[in-house]
Length: 395
Image (tube, rainbow, N blue to C red):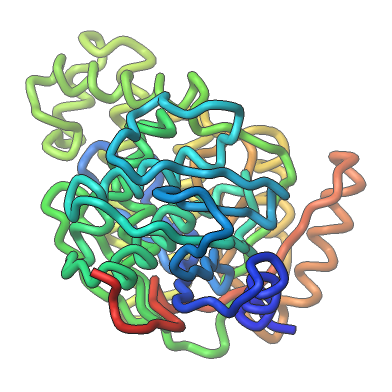
């Protein structure tokens, strides 16, 4: 049974009637351009073929008036969220961390559109949680897409992505950049998205070579992006920008960074060097992809991983091991960590004909040397957020 049929069936079982709306938003993997989105840099993500779906229908007498009754299959949990405009950051009761992302999106739509109608909703996701594939953004964007369809709000894709980013900042406490929400919203089938996180200009980069696959390997080491390390990297970059006299590290040059090594100190210098070189690598990778120079892409991916490991200090033994194992396999073009780091996943570009054997050898080597099992799947660039089922808006 596919995910769409499954969620409709589960919704009927739980709420006693079929859904009226069904939204979907994918997770994303970033091919290159890591930890630069919050510095205004360039990123090159794509949507994966794993999505969060939300089925919903207008509420009935079986729920409290003026509430959204929302269940999650992943967490086997349910929350009742008030729809009276009272939602504020940290206004929740109880430990429903997944629901913070939903609360933030609902609050954003209430601020835009006024009172929302009571509704029932069921969330089901195939995006791995904690794997660096943006399960949180997929949840936010799926909820925002649902509410836009439900209310008939003429929100643009850019406005929707920014609303979801604010929800994550204010309600989940994660100072994320804009890449994840933009990727989940704007990515297109068989394309990567070259996104300028300063100007918010986005360009689709064709990736329609069927002989290539993107392999995502989850180290199954969990990480929390709301933790101190992620926030500290952002503070390091902001401090380096102030010392360099620029608004953000996007405006700094490699020459400036090298000439200011003593001023920046060791940590500031390494953080700034990563950002300015990673932005350059991302631009070069987009150009190489456009001209099918795959081995140039692989070289840039390897340099990106080394920079994240050595200058940005966000890798770990397990991620380094997965990259090492991947690079040793025939047919692998390039590999690097993806996402926030400190665990999570790697992204590998591999020839389709050799992907299955590469996966077998990576899995065996990882288990032997780390004592852990990894999980993996291949994907091609997929479609961004969309409504799969809709009825006329209830505005």
